[in-house]
Image (cartoon, rainbow over all chains, first blue to last red; front, top):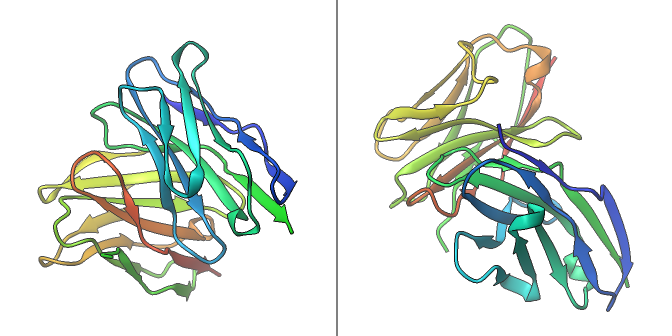
Length: 113
Length: 112
């Protein structure tokens, strides 16, 4: 069975600080990888996804993530965070061809102005 | 921008009662899903639905749960006899293929 670990439960940063949120997964085959964001009171929104090709993927709002197959990791990065990035971030994995998306526990990001 | 809509946003029910959560997926999507998130825990997969049948389901999705697409637009999750541990936020999602899932805002279920 696939699983996803997000190592940080709550991250607090000042505006303009750089962000890296860790995500590791376990799955034996080809995977599709996702980062979703949930702003307070809103639904889950896709930030970025990786299916194949360039392991460095760029998403919306200046976010990017790098798929490192050897480390089973898909860390999310942003060079300079803003107060509006305050939200909960979820990493998710799906076996290629499967319908089931497995989520990590989420990382709450608080950005202090 | 098209979106997935869910009703009700919050439902409070007594243990043992039946509950139906409703979802209107994005109109050209063919794959439909239910996920749930118990407070403080992970978002968990419940079931996926394609071509009018369940395509995949998790261990959580036992005989108390059922899904239906009663007409061309709605996708419902029924919990036959609710238990306290069914209290959670239930998210509906849809997709065009097994690609990006678009989520609704969720229905909070509180079982007393």
